[in-house]
Amino acid sequence: MHHLKLSLLIALLGFTVLSGCSSSGGSSSSPTYSMHATIGTTTLNGTACIASLLGSDLGISGSTVTAGAGGPPQININISPWSGTTGTTSLVAPLPTGSFGEYTASTGTITKVSQTGSVTITAVSSTTITGTFSFTCSDGTVVSAGTFTAKRS
Image 1 (cartoon, rainbow, N blue to C red):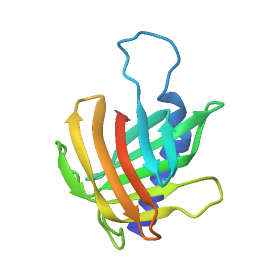
Image 2: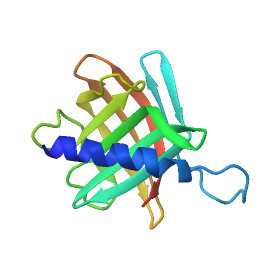
Image 3: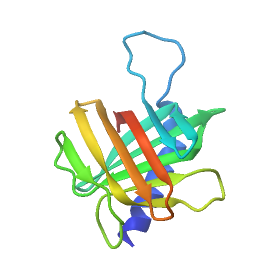
Image 4: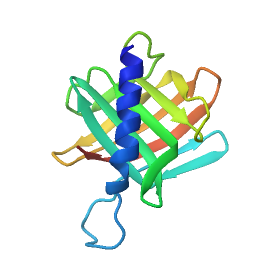
């Protein structure tokens, strides 16, 4: 149940808030919130990324914004519990609780969930969280060379 609630929260955040995380134009000193990764032979160049706290859990969601709306392909990462600082966390099967990664290729497809992997938070500020990640899903899908700069909400 915890996994379902968190997945729904991340998805809602992804679809409603991600569209406001990426900007075109503006000051060059403004951060760019994005997520990039290789999924098998496909590359995700997510143009928006957000990080949100849910209790002691940190949810990070990266997606591509098209026509003002975020959506698949999308990667979600949950760190449970998050210490609030930099460090590396293992991503394992999420049930019943724990830290995990998810990959959704397109609307209407089954979300693939990490079986093994890790996420490393490399920097934390009051407005931004950055890091790297990689994981292998239970069906063998490999998500590698992941990087993100997430807007804190």
